[in-house]
Image 1: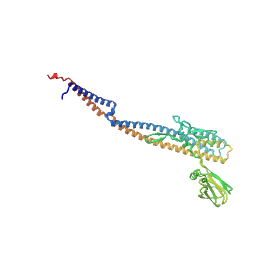
Image 2: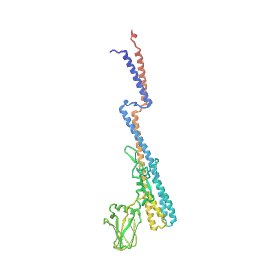
Image 3: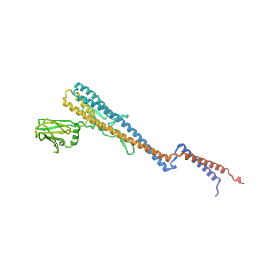
Image 4: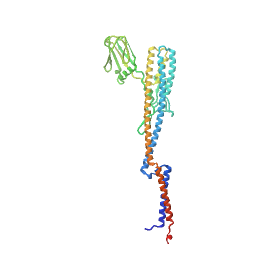
Length: 407
C-alpha cells in the first residue's frame, strides 16, 4: 500500500484537529460545569434533563402558588377574626340591653354603638385583597359581595356575589380553595328557629315560648318537613287533669305523653307550654320555616327594636332572643370558616414540603446526568493536552520528512 505525501498531511492535520476538539470540549465542561454540551453527547440523558428541568420549573410555580394561597388564607383569617371580635362586642351590648334596669335612653345609646358595629361588619364582609378583588364575592370578585338597599322591603342587606370557589393548583393532583364564599360564611346562617300556636279547641288560655333554644333547635331540625307542611303541625291533647298527649297532626304519630296541670307551665323539647283547659281540649302548634339572615341584617333588626321606645316587654324579649340566636349562629359559621382555613393552611404546608423534597430529588437526578465531575474532567483535560501535544509533535516530524533525507 502506497501512502502519498498528501495523505500524510491530511491525516496529521485531522489528528491535531480531533485532539483540539476533544480538548475544547473538556475545557467547556470545566468552565460551564455541564457534562452534556450538546444533545448528541448523550441523547437519552439529554431527554431526561429536559423532562427533569420541566418538572423543576413546574414545582417552582407550585411553590409560588402555595405562597399566594397562604397569603390569601392569612388575609381572610385576619378579616374573620375581626368579624368575630365585633360580634363578641355586639353580643355583650345585647345582653346589657336585656338588663331590667336599662331604660329607653340607655337602649338608644346601645343602639348607636351596635349600629356602628353593623357598619363595620358590613365593610369587613366587603373586604378586598391586594389585587382589589372582593374576598367573599366568589367568582364575582370585581364587585362587592354584599349590597345595602335602605328602601328594600324585607332584608336590606343582601349577598350579591355567588358561591364560586376560586381555586389554585399547588401540586399535580391538588388544587386548594383560596377563599370562602360570603354566602357560606355570612348569608347561609339560620335565624332563631321558632314555633307558633296555630289553633286551639276549648282552652281558656294557651302560651308557647322557647325556653331552651338548643333543645328546641334539635327538635325542629329532626321534625321539620320542608316538603309536607302539615307534618310540621303538632297537637297537644289534654287527656286528664294530670296528663297530656303530643301528636304529629300530619303523620298521626304519637310523640309523647307529658305531665300536665291546668294553668301551670311544663317543658317539652325546649318549649315552655302553659295551657288552661280541661280534658278533651286541644292546642295545635307548628314549626315555622327556617329563615336565614346575614349578621348585618340581624343587627339592623335589633337596632330597630332598641330604637322603638313603645315596644312591649314581651316583644323586646323576643327581639333580643332572635338577635342572640342569630349572632350565635353567625359566630359558629365564622368559627367554622376559620377552622376550614386552618385545615387548608395545614394541607398547603404539607404539600409545599412535599414539593421541596421532590424538587431536591429532581435536581439531584438532573445533576447526576448533566453536571461534570471536576476530578474526572481535570484528569481528562490533562490527557487531552498530552494527546494534542503528541499529535502536534507527530505532525511536525511527518511533514519534515523528505526522500532526499535518504539519498
